[in-house]
Amino acid sequence: MKYVEGAANRDANVNLENIFKSYEGVHAVQDVSLEIEAGSFFSLLGPSGCGKSTTLRIVAGLEMPDSGTVRIGGHDVTNTPPQKRPTAMVFQNYALFPHMSVSENVGYGLAARKVKATQRRERVISALKRVGLAGLLDKSVTELSGGQQQRVALARAMATEPDVLLFDEPLSNLDVELREQTRFELKRMQTDSGVTSIYVTHDQEEALSLSDKMAIMKDGRIVQVGRPRDMYAHPETAFVARFLGGSNIIEHSHAELITEEKARSGEVLAIRPEDIVLRHDGPFEATLLDQQFLGRTSELWLKWKGVSLRVFGNSARITQSEVRFEVVASLWVRDDR
Ligand code: ADP
Ligand code: MG
Image (cartoon, rainbow, N blue to C red; front, top):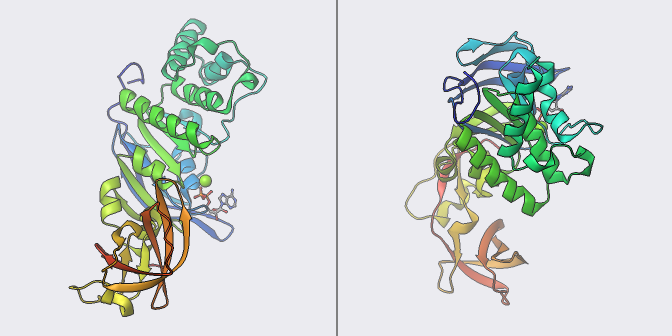
């Protein structure tokens, strides 16, 4: 089955089983197992160096795992070379050929796959239509803006009609406005086409807004997998709470901030910045260390009993140095710092 007008391969799930990969003593990927549903948008989220790109490149066949199995649509492709896999990759730096036109770039993978010229032309036009660039067929890619170049890279990947699209931080080189706009378009195209997509990013907003499901990685391992809303609402560890929600992590000894629950062993309190509310009659008093105006909100730094707390406030400037606050929600999470 091929990727044409709403006819994505409905069987193209991706399954990773116990994947390991090291580079001269660096454990880039450690025991990663994932089940990615056919037709879904799945993100790998984590800080720089946590093993996201290596995992993605292993799915593409650009890296061989030291051990473990990669399956696409139920077929074991662990030893299949990249050009024989039903995958296509979109890179952060676009990786376009500067001496070629838009249509030559988009058609490149098809020529390499020996698709006939007439059919090639059709597929190139169809892919460019999808990304809204059909009018720029014969332009040189060097004449295009960064955003347009990224769309050409996406069209090139889609033109090969892959069962699985792989994205490695594809929006990182775009400026903020274009990045947000392209993010929505990318999501719409994925929803329309239904092609299984794996998306690597270090940007929590991108992962939260785009994904059906996401995995958070740390030091080569998957630490939690789930739907964005569930992950945000129920982080299991201090790392996830901090990485996804920017939560304050508070030791047992300061559990008096919350009322009912007893401290649990091996766990710490995670309190999201938006769950600390400034109130003139609040139960706790803190010193205001710093405040930063962000437009819609402001970010405040409080010091309470030696603990620094990050808080979102309304954007009004606070003039007093002592403020009172309450904690409206908190979670116990595993301490994996
Ligand atoms: P991420 O994409 O999450 O930033 P990577 O998968 O690129 O992380 O890298 C994971 C770890 O593996 C890092 O420590 C990185 O330096 C190392 N690494 C990745 N590729 C290579 C390579 N080709 N040679 C040596 N070390 C590598
Ligand atoms: Mg990377």
